[in-house]
Length: 329
View (cartoon, rainbow, N blue to C red):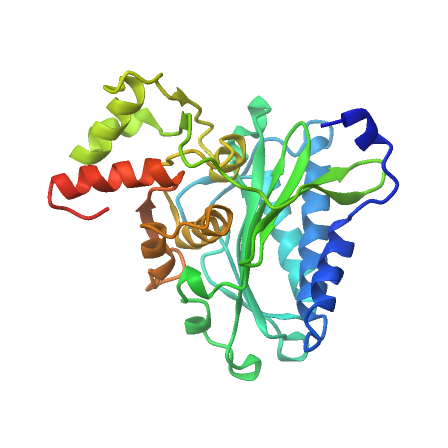
C-alpha cells in the first residue's frame, strides 16, 4: 500500500458519505438510521477527545460509584455515559437505551421517541486509563415493535436481530468499526478534519489465526476443553509454531488488536456477545458456533455468558475438543 499517496488523497470516503451512499441504495429508507448513527459518531468523537486530555482535565481516577457489574466507576465512565445517553436521546430516533453503567434501562420521553433501541458500553476498559492502554466503546442497535408502547422486552432480543453493531477504539489512533450485517468496515478518525475516514473497507479474517487472547489468571476455572485448547496454542503437537498471546483485558481492544483471529475466553455483557458475534459473522461469513451466541435470548438486560470468538479453523478446533468430551461449546 502506498501510504504517501493515501496521505494526499482528495476523494475521501467519510463515514457520513459512506452511510448516505448505503442509504441511497434503499429507496424505502427515510434516513432515521443515518441520523442515529451520526449521533453515535458524535459521541465517539467526544469521548475520544476526553480520553486524550483525561490527565490534563483531571478525568483520571474514581468517581466513587460502582456499576451494575460491580466495577468501580471512573470519572471518564460517568462522563462517557452521560455523553452517549444525551446524544442518543437528542437524536429523536431511540426509545430505549441500555448502558452498562446504569442499573436500569433508560426510557426516552414519548415526544422524543424513535424506532430504535441501543445497547452500549460507553467506555469498555476504563480501568486501563491510568496506564495509557487503549479503551473503547461498544454498541448494538435493535428495532422495536412499537415506539408508543416501548417495553423492556424490546431490548431482550437475540443478537441475530440486531440491525447494526460496532465498536470504537481510543488509543494512539481512533478507529470505528461497524457492520450492518453485510460486511464490516473500519473508519479512522482524522483529527485535522474531525472526520472518520474509511481506511479498512470490507474487513476479512484469516481462516486460521496466529494469536490467542485469554486471561490466564482464570485458568483454575476453565473446563477441560478450554484448558486443552490453550495448551495446544502454546505447545502445538502438529509441528506448527505456537500462537502468540495478546491480552489487554478489554473486549473492544482485544478484538481490534487481534485482527479477528483471537479466541477470547472471557465473561462479558450479553449485549457485547451479540455485538461481537454479529461483527464476527459479518467479517468471516462463517456461522459455526457463533450462531449459538447470536441465538441466545437474554432474560435480563445485564445477563452474562461465556463465548468463543475466532477464525473458522480455530473455532472448529475448540468444537472438536468439546465433542470429544461429549459436551457442547
